[in-house]
Amino acid sequence: MTEAFPGQHTTTTTVTQSSTTVQTDIRYDSTYIRTIPGMLKCAQTVLNLLGFLTISISGYSVNGRGSFFSSISGFGFWFTGILLVLYLFHVVEKFFAIPWLRIEFGFCALWAVFYMIASTLCAAYLSYSAAFACAALFGYCAMAAYGYDAFLKFQGVKSGEIAQGERHVAKTTSTVTSPAY
Figure 1 (tube, helix red, strand yellow):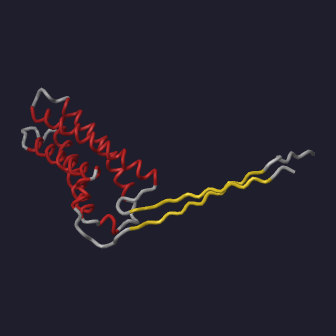
Figure 2 (cartoon, rainbow, N blue to C red):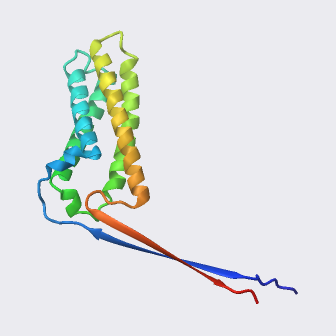
Figure 3 (cartoon, rainbow, N blue to C red):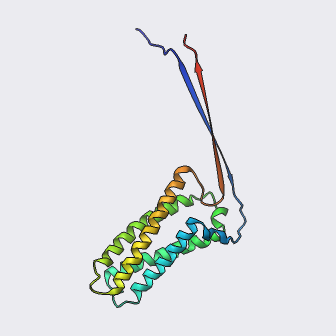
């Protein structure tokens, strides 16, 4: 039985060190609104509210399409609004162990799909009411905002970021090559 032994042996060791820096005190920080995630949350909250009001004041709010759109926009308004307040007061940073980015990624991706369906249903009903046309417009804009936010959250999760605070990740790679015998 012949066993082949490699002429050269290489061992690679990668050490990953991460440090998380957070402030656990609750404080108001208006600079969050000027960040891209903050602007997206503000836009999503406004679009949710406008879409909800557009369908609610129309005569077709009891229609199945209108009711579905109202449900999506109403729940989106409250969830996104509460998240906005949690970020403004750094409650998310206080509870940094909760996987906020994963939760937001799931919600934003799901709401982008829900808004695509709800807006398409409203757009198919354009000839009946101008309210459905406005709701479809607000819905497609909200779909784009939630879709882009989901993309940003996915990138954050993939790179190991946390929602608020700072995480520094340092990778050290060492390679040892033994000589051929």
